[in-house]
Image (tube, rainbow, N blue to C red; front, side, top):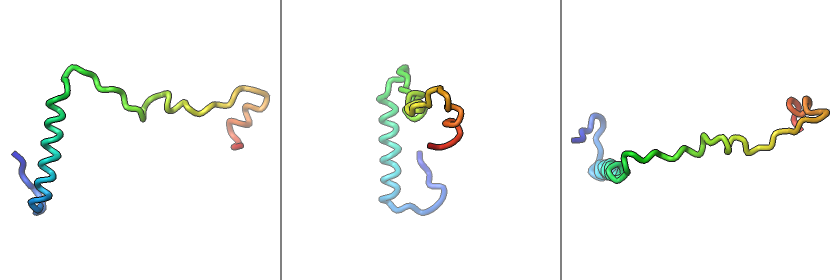
Length: 68
């Protein structure tokens, strides 16, 4: 049972909220409980290390601090 605690939603707003809850519940029912979720792309180490790091060389110490 869903109960409105605050506010006074219109029938259209209430129907939209219930539709979202029903769709989410149906999606959860269709997912297999034992299957692991794929890792999130935003935390992938490959995404973080896409930029080339400066190669060591005679002036490598200067490139680590000064831009350019």
